[in-house]
Image (cartoon, rainbow, N blue to C red; front, side):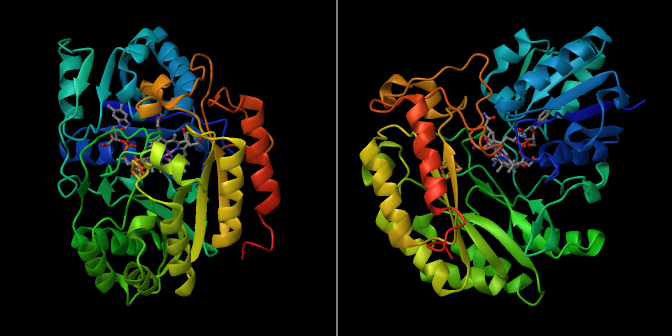
Length: 404
Ligand code: B12
Ligand code: SF4
């Protein structure tokens, strides 16, 4: 029997929940195995089942929209006499709710350095209900234990190549109103370590394409330069996220040399008023320049937009549509605001002029086409209108000639 079974629940609200491996549990598996623990990892999104769990201690990792799946699992395992631990983004922000829904223990935040202590406390029946993570140094954690799950079950591709996901930093130095970060302390792993992980994934699994899922991969230009110098001789493809304020011509040049073929930018809105109210730290002019700088280097710019942010009106949606026509990004992703626990909007909706329901609401903002819905109202827009405006932007521009 294993010392712990770590489970990532299904995400039935997504188009496909077997796209990328859940790195959170794979990081925990790596640090536990180093200490000699036997660990089992199950991803219910790729066909594993709860019946396969082979341990008396079960750890479940989940986001807010996965919480109902997680609570069902917790209750099922409790009935079997198991001790159940909650971790991940939702547990970090809503620990009491997890305890009320069947969990014995909650770990808030990054758990690499505390998970073995939790296991030992459970074994001696001395466990607390809530543990707080230590601040994990990004250079000190091991690479995720990707052998704990069969990587061939995941279907992500970049430029037609099988791709996988890496995270080279933790957290983010910004404070957007809608963001639900699990930690406030921004740390980057070194350029050397980042290049090592890429080479290791290439040698061990054959990957030649990588989704860098950092919140802000390009936060430090010097580190970026060093990474580029180490990987530029290999013909790898990358996708990453970038903030408009950091996507200068120089940075876009570096990304091109590295092999980045697409950058996702959190544009959010075409209205400077909305951007300001949501503490985005960017303007529509910066956003336009960022798209231009990427396009000049032949890198695809994908604009991520949110409809229904605090301050949204019919007029600001028009401004967003005007921005799309001016900036002409290569692709769009239009979602609807869903205030997630941990975000400034969730914590203080009144201050943002937002109302929404949380109970019994899945709160996903991007899922299956034609199934978008929201409970959010702004001062000027009712929920149904927010959905209509979101659909209007998508119908008008997605896959249209205006976007290349
Ligand atoms: C990659 C990613 C995705 C991928 C998921 C791939 C996958 N299978 O994991 C995709 C694109 C599919 C995705 C989708 C969504 N995502 Co997402 N995603 C991320 C992202 C960028 C990285 C996740 C990651 O690997 N982090 C690195 C690891 C190390 O961190 P971690 O997972 O949090 O794990 C650590 C701790 O949480 C803890 N821990 C984790 N699990 C467990 C379990 C136990 C037992 C214990 C003790 C501890 C523990 O220890 C881990 C190691 O330090 C995060 C932002 C971020 N930087 O973390 C957002 C994030 C997780 N996503 C978020 C959201 C909102 C979504 C969506 C709902 C968006 C939507 N479509 O509507 C969906 C929901 C997906 C789902 N399955 O529920 C939010 C979650 C907020 C919340 N309150 O739940 C985040 C935090 C972004 C944000 N800042 O707001 N996402
Ligand atoms: S939305 Fe992105 S840039 Fe803004 S705080 Fe969250 S992770 Fe940072």
